[in-house]
Length: 331
Length: 296
Image (cartoon, rainbow over all chains, first blue to last red; front, side):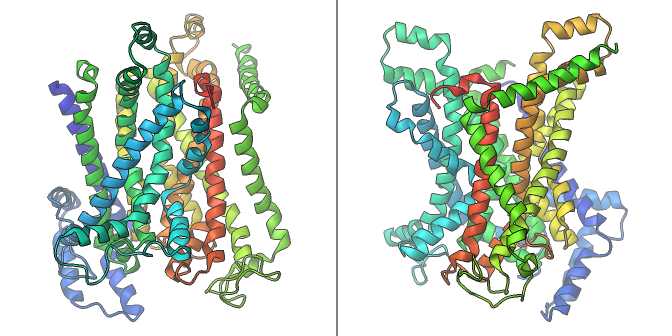
């Protein structure tokens, strides 16, 4: 891996993070008045008592150094965010936003990683099969259905699944991450319970993702199948299976991985809403809770966290890319 | 020089004519346009069939299932759900249109500049595109929405447009890179046309199908982003929208209470809308890249 490539990728990562931080900073300062005071006053007027009001305001002023020059404030803010110091929750004061995220993160990470990997792998194979000339017409007839699934946003699909399989068929729970009383030992029963609760949210992510990956793969595979080296491979008498996997899919996968890196942001946004639909106790639901409770720092903190993790994931994918495509380092 | 302008215009109109004449051979594009036309028709005719004032809260009896009087029933806030649906569809379509137009304009312009001039310009625009593609749009929208508290549908459309130009910029840039090597661009250059004139009058018309496809993509991305914001309760509070209807349904537990008439219609309308936009975009892609037509 060349040094220039590495520097470029890390530079992009830093630019992404800095841009997001800067947007956040500008927005917070462009709003007239003191946002935290305004929100606390608004909560008060709704008759909700917020404890430790004075401490929260003091914490806020100290954190942003509101009496210091604006560039100093900006510098402090950037440093804090880069150290994952995302402020203190209003609702759960004095718990920090980072602690709250740490509590919710395993749920989201587990659900999202498994569901996305299944969708990505299944979709890629399916898409390659759909482009393959030897595939029966009956299988190819699934393409339109895949298109419809890929066009409908995750969470709308999630709501329909919730109603059909949860409310009508009563096959799956309507929400939550696990059953009450099961918490405790990490054994087979608990694993099954977790999988049972994650099934519907996972299924909606897989169904929507499946269509997207299959269609993208189909497009890439059609282009690869026209290449001369495929004809040569056939002429050499290689088995169709070998041509399909080693010559076709291997090359058509490259744009898929780029796609994956580019769509991580959308995937993360979509899963936030899936969690809301299923009251799944991950980052998305934490965000929803924060939005309902006007927990300003928590909202901002979670948004910054989303940006940081997506940027980090893109960086990792970018750095892994030369492993699957050796040509990339020669640029 | 004056002879160049008419040629350009006929370039654009011939692209449009070619696209229309290809419609029967492009089932995806036709199907998408028909579905979209259907939605537009409902949005246009609907207000004649129902009093849209019933879309406001506390105007009818709450929690009524669909009946002859209330076609799609009523919700827990006392809104007539058919009236809500009819009056929110134009909002959604308008938001998509504004976000799409602004997004594709910015995207095409940046893509054209990056592809045509190359070098430093290309590098700066390319980096900006990559950066904005990485940041989840919902994160920025939520940061803005949670700071300003109240957001109107037009402000929302503009913020969303600022987040919907990247795919267009990318696609246009790639196409410009290939177009600018074509012989007719060389001829224009030799004959003394300025860079700007070549970019606007020789290259731009040939990007028409791609710009259309980018427009549809930006509309779709815009509606999707707005929907995400609305489902989280951050939509406009004073005008009914499809996303806010889903938000209210979730908030008042319409699922557990089996009130399917509350959440199903907006979801069906949105699903049809997204499928229509997808089909139009796929149809346009096929028109540009004939290889995709195989076996479909």
